[in-house]
Length: 233
Ligand SMILES: [Zn+2]
Picture 1: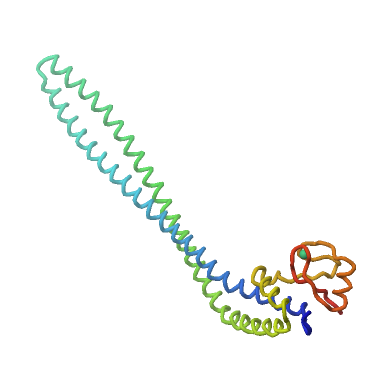
Picture 2: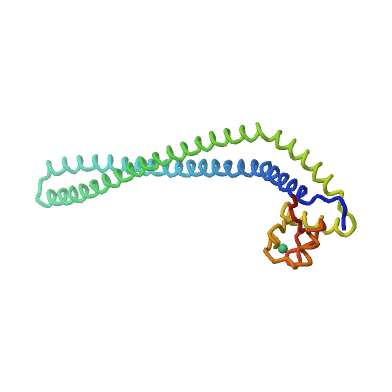
């Protein structure tokens, strides 16, 4: 067994170190989340802008069709007025009726396209608003993170030194076992057994194990392998 180990203290240091590391790695992760939200909003605005162009182009082309239909109708009206036979008159009238019906359909379609364009325009405005909100949010988050990151890095360096000093009391096999545990579970490599069971997996300790821990020795949980200790004093 390794002498001079203060496992409660080491556990506390490991937890503090992990908390600081989480803050430092959490910042860039949060920034990436926000950046992807912005990119998505920009993509959506672009997509809708394309759709808006298409709707407007379709409305324009239907408008041209409508104009030519109207010109055609004027022409037919003139033919009707100068028709010299019933047959000519009836033919012009039939064509006029058909063209008027087609004109009404075109007018409906144009209105529908203009409605759609208006709806898309609103969606674009909303998407752009969301993007600028997300950008402001990102700037704010980044500034806050930057203002604290230096302090966290200093804390991290200090804690790493303290952890290394506390760990240096491990010797022999314990040293390797401990290293593997910390690599795998970080601060959760250690678990207190203050209540008579492993606080990681809750398995009960044997009376013998309790005696061992109470006498200041440490042991590894037989079930989950964590390094067990008890808080004294
Ligand atoms: Zn356990």
